[in-house]
Amino acid sequence: MRYYLAIDIGASSGRHMLCSLQNNQIYLEEIYRFENHVELKNGHYYWNIDYLFGEVVAGIKECVKHNKIPTTLGIDTWAVDYVLLDELGHRIDDVYAYRDNRVDSFIKPDKIEELYMKTGVQYQKFNTIYQLASDDELRKTRTLDFLMIPDYLNYLLTGKKVNEYTNMSTTQLLDIQTSKLSKELLDFCQTDVEIFQDIVMPGTSLGSLSKDMRKVIGADIEVIVPCTHDTGSAYMAAIEDKSIILSSGTWSLLGIETMQPIVTLESMNANFTNEGGVSATLSLFKKYHGTMDYSGSFKKS
Image (cartoon, rainbow, N blue to C red; front, side, top):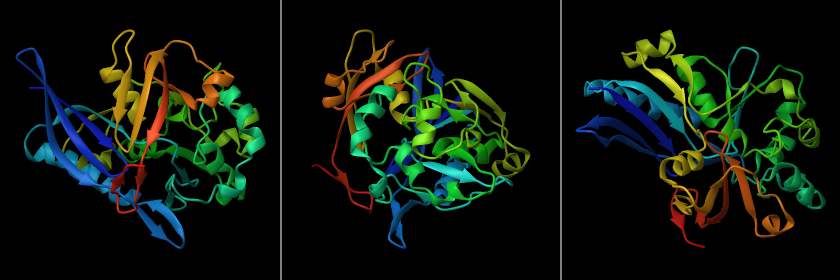
């Protein structure tokens, strides 16, 4: 029997779901689950990315333990957060969590409408564009590579560096008309285009696990880049033609799938966002959220 592994990581937990076809039906099995939460250090909130990767590997090894070795695997996570690597491919700093307040002094209220019209992405203080504007590491001279959280986890598995489209679409760095990095937006956050990788579409194969990871896991598995933004994966899996979807987790996201962006003053004032989906689609939705305390518990607001 062939198995396919989906690794879904959210702000408070992660899980490994094995998929197989049995009697012409899709069968799903949760084979591993783990907790996730941000950590407070030196007045800032971070993700424990080493712990997260360790849990990714532990869940894959659980599949091997049960002799249910996946043919392929894919990882999705939340959006906007990222990792910077040095010239040797090593992470240069802890990974800031999007709820950290380091961006506060870099918000420019007079630019919010201009940025929305350029990107179609709703204003959120933690959008990647503001995080990069506040990142001191980018002002140093060393060579840097930018990877979003799932990109980094894929890099650790395969040694391949890419930026996946649906997650990149959340950064507020892509021109909504071209789906490409905008020099104007990069200039806004004083960021060089050279730090970014090739932007790949969902369904791209990164090939096998690296040699070292094959030894650690005890098997070889093909790594596929899905919609690495969890909302993109949720919309792809659930939405039907001319329907409305509500995807609920730490955030509740209510919207539709569309082939064309909707970028108007009305959509901006209603705080709708346009984010990338599979097969050149866009997800147009409004975010509703509660507050997550920093132990990972969720409280309605």
